[in-house]
Image (cartoon, rainbow over all chains, first blue to last red; front, side, top):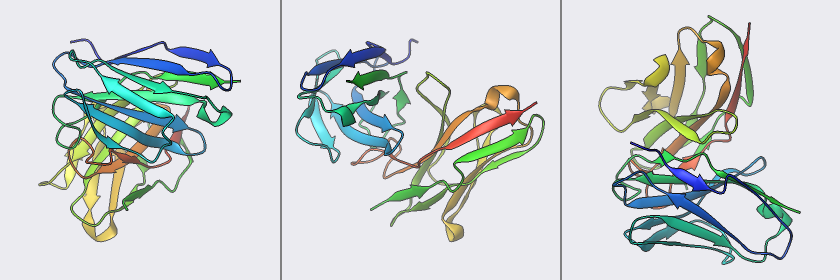
Length: 114
Length: 116
């Protein structure tokens, strides 16, 4: 079974732009969670989607948003990029909701904001 | 709020030697505990997890971890490390098997260096 895939793997943007990252979960998984990883803050939970509904959201500004499609694929969007948004963005999928089932992580998207 | 502390930022171990990575957590209820490993350029791979029952948990790649409620610890061990074990190791806690309402809470990680 194929693992979690994320596209693109690398991205370079400039301040003020917006960006969309994509995540395809493991086949059959219905939950997708997003995490931001930075050297300073470590791994931080962004949000979780289950059956196309956002269940939970971490402590991030409204510039960070996401959605999930009927095939469970998910996208996250960051608007008005700031230098501090440079990070590795990890997506994780699970069969059940994020609080009931083990999460499996993708390789991440490395976002650099110049 | 739940939190995870990994006291060691870097650890250097000789190949073939034993390994113990420390993890302390703060959580009000019975925690769900995890160890993940991240190799350069890779995502996180689950090594093992603890929900309940036997406090000694076996994982993949020869790793094990012991849950000690009295010490709020969940240390990761391996009897003999291999050069391929060099990576970043993360301990995490959650409300549920998948992390809970606020997702997984991660420690800052321990960077493991293997000396030949």
